[in-house]
Length: 134
Image (tube, rainbow, N blue to C red; front, side, top):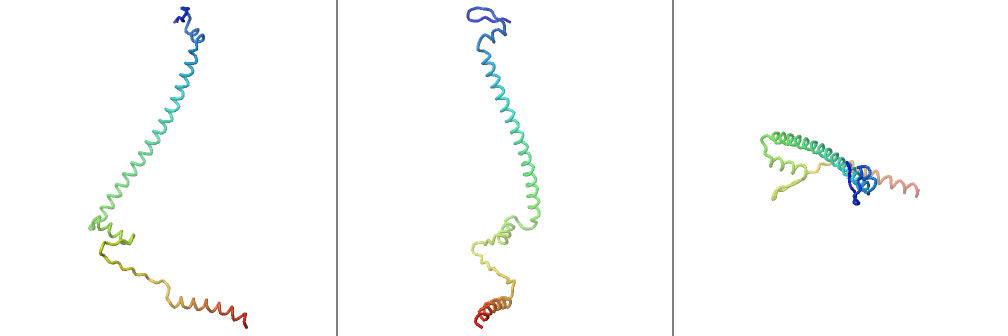
């Protein structure tokens, strides 16, 4: 295969690349293709990772839907609203408008123990002062 330059001189394929600045264009084209290939591989890897993550999340959603259906069935005679109301009252101390709530606090220690503890503390303080004055 032969080419002709501007002066009309005939040259071969290899001679044309050596004699003109086309090798620069060839190198730049090669670099661009390397750059695009590298980034394309990165995008493909990221896409695969996101697809794997998406499959995992879809499996979790399916499992949660099944669990939700089981919980709905386990409510039995009570409706969903009644169960929500019951949980709200028990765990969050909520009340319905117009409803009065009474809170009962059970004491874990008897008052006699607290009085004895106070007296023993006071006796210790008094004994410190008695020892210094006497």
